[in-house]
Length: 261
Image (cartoon, rainbow, N blue to C red; front, side, top):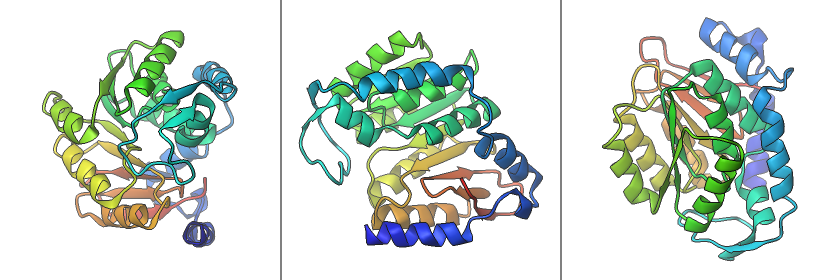
């Protein structure tokens, strides 16, 4: 807790807004995607109504946690309410990712960590008609629950990949031509995070984007994030405290931004 609090205050004092941005690309991204919370897009209401239902659901499910797990609850039997509250991105962040997808219009996206499917739903609703999302979930009970939610929301451009991510990610990457967008919200440890990053990079291109959730969740995640944004293969990196975003964009000067969100 002290580590996270110290990291937040460091972020708070260093974070800038659009007035400090001299990069046209980052200025547009910040003003139109990251900071732009003025409009409620068509998907927001229906997904948030589902979130409300899940946060009121005390049904207990058996899960298989293959990642770092919850900081507060190590039980493998949890209520849907608890899972939704702990594992789903908050509306502010999920809706920012919706705007990011809408802005980028990727054809192939990866979502590492489906959980109950709320964040995946936001990504899917913003994808172009011909786009597809591969979402990965190790707990079959959660994958089945997410599939039910996708049906409720009339989402058809998502394929759920069940099983251990260490095995299913390489298998899926071998079958796709490229990765335009990826959200890594799975095993919150140093080695797996860096390994997933390296594996995904093999299918990335100049305009690919990778988002990392919980970059200050632990010392391991903080170290992973520091290694990732310092990587010479990354052109632009953006620290929003809850999430970190990296753009390959190697044709331009390497820059790192800490921005208010």
